[in-house]
Every structure is written in C-alpha cells, then in structure tokens.
Image 1 (cartoon, rainbow, N blue to C red):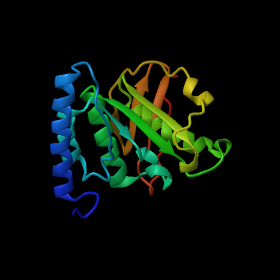
Image 2 (image 1 turned 90 degrees about the vertical axis):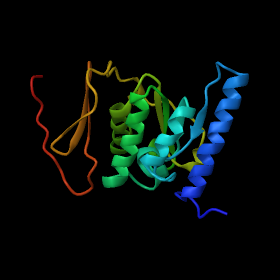
Image 3 (image 1 turned 45 degrees about the vertical axis):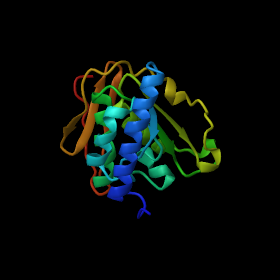
Length: 193
C-alpha cells in the first residue's frame, strides 16, 4: 500500500504507469492526446510533477488556485501551483484550471473570487489554457458562461513578471495582477494610460 498523496512510491508508480500508457496510446493512436487529472500540490510538488511532462499533452488541474473551494492559495502553495501551471505554458502543454469557490448558487460568486481566478488564469495562460469558475462541488461538471469570460483582454505581450511581490502580465487590452501573499498589501500605480 501507499501512504496517500505525496508518497514517493505512489508517485513513482504513477509515472511508470503513465509512461506505459503514453507509449501504448501513441503506438496505437499516433494523433491522440493524453491528459491527466493532476494536482501539483497533492502529487508531491513540482519536482515530481515535472516527471509527467514527457508523457502528457495536458493537465486537468482540479484544485486550481482556489484549492478546490477550500480558499485561495497563498504563499508557498500559490507559488508551487503557479510554477507548475507556468511550466505547462512554457512547454506548450494544455491546461484546464478547474476553479471552485465553495459557494452556492452560481449567482453568489463574488467579483473578488472571479477576479482572483481570472487574474491567475491570465498569468499562466498559454495557447491551450482554459478555466471556468463554479460555486461548489454539487455543481461539479457544469458550465455557466459569465460575462467576465468575454472581456477583450487581447493577446499576451509579455511573460509573467514579478515586481515588488506582485506577479503581473501585460496583454494588448489590459494587465493581470496577482498578489500571492495573505499578509501584505501593495499599492499599484497605473503609468502611461
């Protein structure tokens, strides 16, 4: 048996299994894509998650930046999530960020929750990155289009940057800013607009 999430033997067994499945699928269906349902925070951290990269085309990240509804990730947990999601972007892998707010119904999702989710999504957005926000696990698997999904933010003009504790990314139609700390506030001054 294994000792649960993060157990090195479990992670090693998962990577070996994924390697076998990947080779078998690509041998039989060369144009097929392989997605995994993985969480860097549950699956042993970035050094283990990186071992999945040769065998996947994308990741369905179930907890996302909202911790599956347990609350917004901050500090080290936020950074580890960000590091994995950004690595997927850099390596050209697809990413689906599943974001649960822990509320019900959909109409109770606050602007702050929606902004947190979308700013983090934009920070790590690649050519095949998607997200959706929904209230709780009772609504799991449902999709409700929200007006915020249609904002014309444009194309990314930069990679994510860190400046004075804030992570930011510039788009042709705006910027995404994320403060990953739970204890510090930062003043941000708009320049040149």
